[in-house]
Image 1 (tube, rainbow over the protein chains, first blue to last red):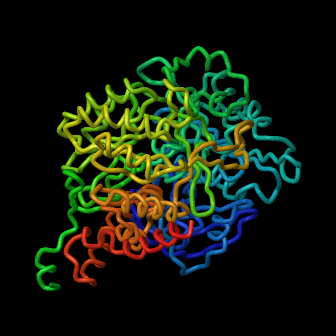
Image 2 (image 1 turned 30 degrees about the vertical axis):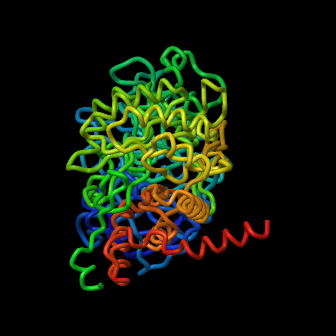
Image 3 (image 1 turned 45 degrees about the vertical axis):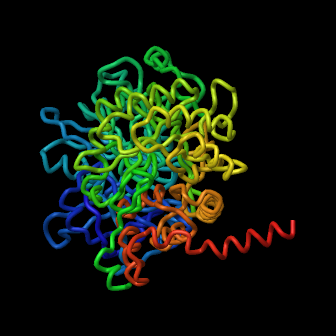
Length: 292
Length: 324
């Protein structure tokens, strides 16, 4: 983890997103898929927190060596909107790479990557690293509309097959990534699943993988304060490893990549209907979860 | 004078026996658990760190969302997530104090017994430089929503902790309470070495749903730059009424200028919390800026800044009293 003052090399529109490339050799050198950056807002008192972005690309060699790419949007808020409007040669206060990365399979070879919305930024980086390790990569790429499908051409270049899903049917088939999952699983002979996207989507992917005994890794999104483990706010409830019950672990330090089988999805996403496994697993302390 | 001051100039402060290399600490809940800040800041250059608030039993903490950004602030609620006293003493405490970092341990509870158990387990340990008493939680015994909002209860809790403690004890007065001076006075009369002003006041943040079906409100506490004028007023009021008591300012301090204002208003030291979440080096940068301020003004120690605003403030208080 390094902190750097990084110059913006370029900022360009990619569909519904703004793609920003930074010059940050020390961070780029260490960055792995699934990790993220924490970027400070401009001086002033209005926005007090950094904003956090998955690393989309980190170049160690060639003409782009030492650069990092991340994406903003769609529909950025006020603070992130400032970043989307920042221009080349401006510089940013960046901390990274943060978080635990995806791990690569040692023996298994057929990898199915499931990305929804901006989750595709991290999985595109992962696809590249998997291909470099002679793995077979297939992708399901989903979004609400055509514009929010992130870099489908890159996905096609990296993958054996790509299934594109949009909610409005403006590109590929109409529906969500889940609708494409059973067919893709059968067709590709997937041995391991990687997913990134909104929590509700990840929960469904986790359910599918559990039912089919497929090993999986998911990169979660949760609201972050600092991004490096101090504020204890971006927590995800997971089964304890060596004791009964659950604990709230930080998505920034212990994640954002998790084994979905350890995540207590219903407790985390609070739909009001805890699953049997959640209830059985929870042994609370005297004041556990006390909202004060 | 200026020449002599330069020869002996120091940032060190003595808060009733708690000697810190600089007057700038990292506030409770913002210093991590001893691993997070490595590589981002050298904690030996920080005046001291306050641990997250430790309770007797482990707390798994509040559900998400736990944080929401406000204008010039954050609304947060961790639900006092912490590993509990035994696990803290067995692991986190040693990590926090590694390399000689001065650790103030924040203790919190809902009953007198819990505070007594916490202080008796911690006060004799060499890693503990001081205790900071968190008083903003609910009072389980007296069934009140904020334990530390009542001077009688503050006296009782602080008295019990202070009587048995071998290390300095600071009472952190909850934010959002009336009569800050009375609460501070109650703590000091009961034996507190000093007071930390103030805890975060209660607040509500509303967040758009993040793909979560349920919760979107953070029912928590406000921190960040928005608090600074409130902090200054509390520091000034308490320092005027209790001039010999070490006051630690906490709430909204982000820059060296902010910290100097707090020292001028009567604080002996400051804590930075939210600012650390954005810039982990803030406590070091602020200390450096205070040193520059001392140099520019030919002053020898941060103590020399203390209360330099006091005459003006006293006049203003006097006028208000005269007309009321």
